[in-house]
Each structure stands twice: as structure tokens, then as C-alpha cells.
Figure (spheres, chains in turn yellow, cyan):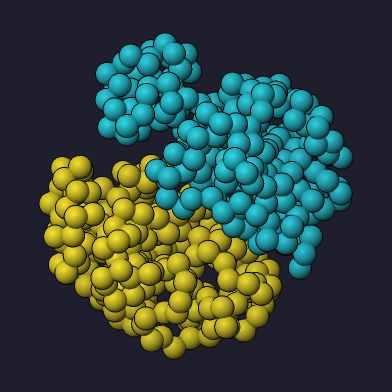
Amino acid sequence: MLHLVIADSELELVPEKIRDHPSVVNYARKRGKKPDEVLLDSTYHHSALKLLEDGERRGRPDIIHLCLINALESILNKEGKLRVYVHTRNDEVIYIKPETRLPRNYNRFVGLMESLFKNKAVPRDLELLKMRKGTLSELLEEIGPDGIFIMHENGNLLTPKEFGEKLVNYASPAVIVGGFPHGDFLSEVKGERISIYKEPLMAWSVVNEVLINYEGSLLW
Amino acid sequence: MLHLVIADSELELVPEKIRDHPSVVNYARKRGKKPDEVLLDSTYHHSALKLLEDGERRGRPDIIHLCLINALESILNKEGKLRVYVHTRNDEVIYIKPETRLPRNYNRFVGLMESLFKNKAVPRDLELLKMRKGTLSELLEEIGPDGIFIMHENGNLLTPKEFGEKLVNYASPAVIVGGFPHGDFLSEVKGERISIYKEPLMAWSVVNEVLINYEGSLLW
């Protein structure tokens, strides 16, 4: 069983500081929501983001959508060998049941995440997605993996295939992928830093490489 | 060099027959466009789609977006070993330069595709994406692959790894993945039908498995 953690994800509601910014007010009104109910999204809140600390990397629900839709529809997940978690920059953790069929449409995914921030579980009865406060360290303690690997540009360079072969030596490894567009992790975590390519890769490309090479070593 | 063809893709402008349907008219007006300038999208035109032949599978730019964003950001593409083409249900072919950085945001991707249908090339100077009329057979003739593989639920069952190993025996294979949610290909093509899993997979999951297992056999 592989535990995939999308960590320090740039997924949050619009912070209080910019809730009266015109780009936010207009966006919320168009969607029939209040400014404190909508996700921060760099595509639409670009000018407001400049007023925030780390503004150049924040507001990226698209990255989380791409990582999750690839992970949940993977063969590894269909084989019951994957658990997926999203940890956010504000230390929330989203638990996702493996049978969850996420919306393929981005706008519907954004609506689902907004509902999750509001209600802490969606749908309320099935709780396919649940959100709790928690740091990355607390999440890892709860998972209790027998190996922790942090995907990092400056990590030990292995080919994706070698990393897949390495992972199957662990019964329950955790692999941490940054849910942000560039820069470094905000959270401090102990684990082996791994790089699978000589150049930076997008988060969802790392997710695909890790899951498919692990699957290749584990199953075939 | 692997040639990836997303075939019979459910990517089209709103067909004439439903351009005066309220769901289409409202959607176009909200986006400041004319009904004949917007992509058909099942998320927004669900009720109008019922009036169209094959309506239950049409209007899926989300599938094309997911396939392309995974393919273009893959290690295989960064290594210069991949060419990607989109063939549509209406026999258009989209040629995509490998260095293209597609919009991560779905709504921006939709806008880009609409511009491509209108202008046949975007951006007009660089022509990163070009569109021409052409059938799947014509595209394959043009590519001239030394092997043609059609990813199909009822194909010869190989593990993804075995298929990757098979593909590297060809200098320039073409792999055809259906750009539709379910059902069968509309185009007739000769080639070996391959299945990589005992259950149906989403198109982007097939793309990921094929590219990463080919990469694994070719490069590492």
C-alpha cells in the first residue's frame, strides 16, 4: 500500500486580507457566492495575489485537481494499493476514499472543494472527502509509514524505474509530492529526498511517474 | 519516437442543431461569445445534448485537456521522444508542437481551443497548435509509423509493462487512444488492438501508462 501525500498544497479559501479586492468581489458575485466562500485561484485573482505573502505561488486548485484525478483513476488505485491525502499550506488535511469519483470538470471540482471547506465532509452522508486540521508531521504520524520519501528537485537522483523498485521494499511507504507550482516545501519533514529527473517536473507528472513505476514493480 | 494520437475526440464547436437551445444561448452570453463560437461541453449543455446523435458521449474537452496536459508535461516529451496529435469526431486533426505549454486552467484551455477552431492556428505567429481537416487514416498515413496500436477494452491483454517493452521494438510506433468517455471508436483503423487492464480505464490513465512504460523501456 502506497500513501501519496500532496503536501503544502496551494488550496485555500480567499484570505481575509483580499476579500474586498475587486477581482475577488466580482468573481464571487458572478458565481453567486460570498467572497469568503470561494477558493483562491491565481487565474482569476492574479492582481489581488500580489498583495499576499507568497502570492506568486498561491491559489492553485488546478494542480490539486490534476494530481487527484490522475491518482484516483490509476490502475494502482483500482487495485486497492493506494491511499491519497491532500495537506494544505494552512495545515488542513483532506482524506479521500479510494472509491471517490472526482468531477472531471475543473469548475465542478472547485465547487466541491468550496463545499468541503464549508462543511468539512462531502457528500455529508458518504464522507468520500473529509477535511480536518492537521500538520504534515501529524498526518505522517497517523499513517505510520515504514519509509518516507520526499520528491524534491535537489534529492538523490534515481530513475523513476529505480525509485519504483526501491519503493516495493517497503510494506507501507509514504511519498510526499509538493502541491505547489515552484519553490520549496513550507513544512519541515524528515525523510529521504528523491529526485526522478534532471529538471523540475510538474506535480502531476511526478505523481504519474511514482504511481506507475511503483505499480510496475509491485504488480507486473 | 512515439506518436500518440487521441482519436475520435469529443471536441467540437456547438453543432448548428442546438445553437438556439437555452442552455447554449445562456452559456455563450455569459462568456461574451456567440453560440457558434463556443465548445460543446457536456457539463453545461447536458439537456441540449439529448437532442444530438451520440449525445451521451459528446462534448468532452475535459478529457482532451487531461490527456494533453499529462502527455506534454511527461518526461518522454521533455526527452524529445513524443509527438502528440488530436483527431476529432468531425475529422479535424490538431498538431501540437512538443514545446507547447498548455494552460493548466481548464477554462483557459477551452478558450484556446475555441480560438483554434476559429483561426486554425494559435498563437498565429508561433503556430504551437495547428488544425487541419483530416481523417484518422490520413493522419496515420502522414505519420508513417512502423507499428500501429489501438488501445481498446477488447484488445490483446498485456500488462502495461509488457506493452512498453513491445513498443520499443519499433522505431516510430503510433499509439491510438480514444478521446471519448465510453463506447467504441467511430473511425475504422487497421492496427493491433491492445488492452492494458482487465477493466476500462479513463483515456488519460491509458495515456499515462503507455507513455511512462514506454519511457521506462526506452530510457532507463
